[in-house]
Image (cartoon, rainbow, N blue to C red; front, side, top):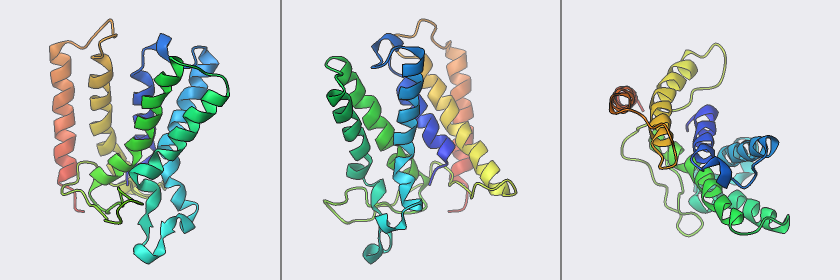
Length: 202
């Protein structure tokens, strides 16, 4: 699995990719609440750490909260809740893809670690699917004395942060885009940390 920081950054990316004036909540407090909720959505699949009953004991403890369908439940509830609260189109439509991407980012990132298989297509198919190659490092136990937590977090940030900057700074609505040399430098950093991550024992 990826770290809670990595999952949070995925949510920040989906939030930041939307042009500010097109976000569903445009006040400063509203945007902070919306960002916070997207982070909650991105973290939500790990609720099975708190509620072990959510794993399928009869299927080797399959993490069903990490299925694609499960990760879209909270985004769906969010959009329905906003509709009931009076948010109408077109702003309601602008909530669809950020919430969906925040939810889907969790199983995708955990799958890219390549350590454990996930029941991505549960409940439609019980197959446990493992990535053929680990692109992201696994998250070590978050303890202040755990060296591997810090080392793997550093590698994870070395992959996610450059990718995040390149994507966000080159969006069509951005006034000041990255210069070619800046993009090249960030891609080089990304490639270095990807190489380090893929070299870790799984």
